[in-house]
Image 1 (spheres, rainbow over the protein chains, first blue to last red):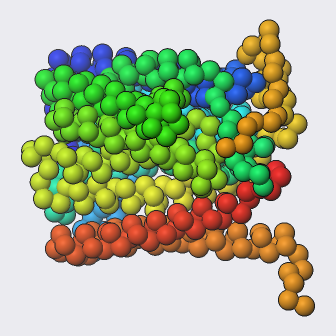
Image 2 (image 1 turned 180 degrees about the vertical axis):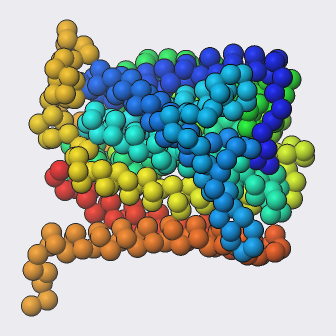
Length: 432
Length: 76
């Protein structure tokens, strides 16, 4: 990625448009999976949160997000450090003014970004399941979509300093065609901040140990994972064409790599859970599938299919291992596995893109460029996301009251449950 | 004497110091990484300092985990 805008012909614009039309399937898949991984008494709340968060994210990004994010070749602010200028933020107009919404690459990128920012905003919904208030999710999404996401996405996709690391001798600059960093890692890191700020669910951690609180519907989780696949292929392909100067001819490679990666991720998680617990775990396999998809977003264009399968397999294994690590060792309550899927999977994909890239995408210094991007995610995005949500928590409590959590968010915040025919309140879960 | 007069207050101050230390390490690690890219010439030197920055960030993450683990077992 050298930060230059690609030249676009009619065929490329048509292919990108078709790919972007698939992108909402990713949102639907993730929303359904998040709902299935939470408790039955908060299932409607989870789906409504998804709808509201997508709406707020799209609005906030259009109002001010594009102004900070921009597109390569368009106006931006620079700062000079060590004798060289660093493109750090775009200087577009608010409300998408100044951008002609025609078939140009910048207009198509803006269209794709609306789904990208919505996907990033959906990720923390899984981590905050069963105790994150609907209003807090909307306010937090405003901060993510209006500031955190556009700033980092400008650095990666808007011609910013990470994209231009190639000019400083670091390969082709930071490589991320499909959004493993700007969508998944940013969303996953925000999910970690939310999980820390709202704290664990009541009864999750106690002096007796850690309680297993399983998701209420593994069928929904697996269906969400399958539904997300075509959307993911579309987003990876559209991102590659718009931000990595790929051609429509590379579409089969992107689709094959994305599918192989997802499948191997699920199989690796199935193998690990079969080995660890004696039988495969459907929820963890779906988590592995999502984690491998997040990893594929960085690698889909730049690796051969065999490497994509290996990367997906490692991602699935990492996700299965890290879900347990966060749950049992680190004391992070993440019902949707969002941190493992999107932050761990995405960061592994970014690293793998630097290590396993084909020769034409791996000049000297490429792994180092990827490491600088990862260092920016951990060292800058995490403090920023945590700080903004901590401030929000001071003025608007993000966690529901104890009564609301006991009652379930469906009844407490919405007044009606997802499954009115039956209602089970089970306070005591088996200790691991 | 020698006993902690207010355990809740001590826990809060421990958590605050660990939290602030964690974020300081995160930001410092990032500053080292981008300074290395901006200021150093050879790839080996850049790589060493970026790795050092990442190590500092991982230390900061460890501190953040400790800070939030102090809530474990506490009724919320």
